[in-house]
Image 1 (spheres, helix red, strand yellow):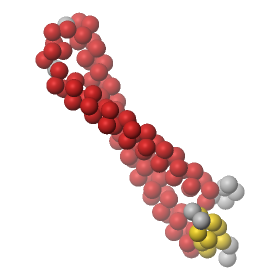
Image 2 (cartoon, one colour):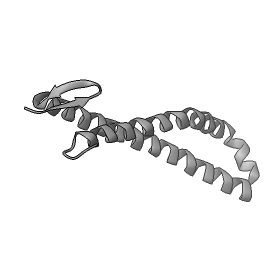
Image 3 (cartoon, one colour):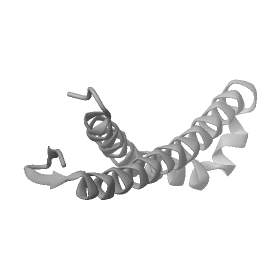
Image 4 (spheres, helix red, strand yellow):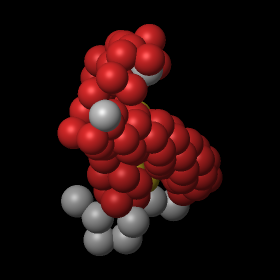
Length: 105
């Protein structure tokens, strides 16, 4: 049996298989998290485009949407750091998974 160091722990092949399975699940979870956050950020972006068009064509219409715009803006400021962290986590998990592949670093 061979051993591999993962996260500082020496693991035999069965342990490596478990770690690989766990990392595959974590990679998929982090990918879904990033995709969900991207979807919400794109929705907010589309709302801002719509608001920009209204500002250019009918500024009075934006006054009616003020609460919605403020809500989207507040949500944007909350989502951006969460998105950045989710991308870092996803990339970290992908790198960990690559290390488990034969010939990985």
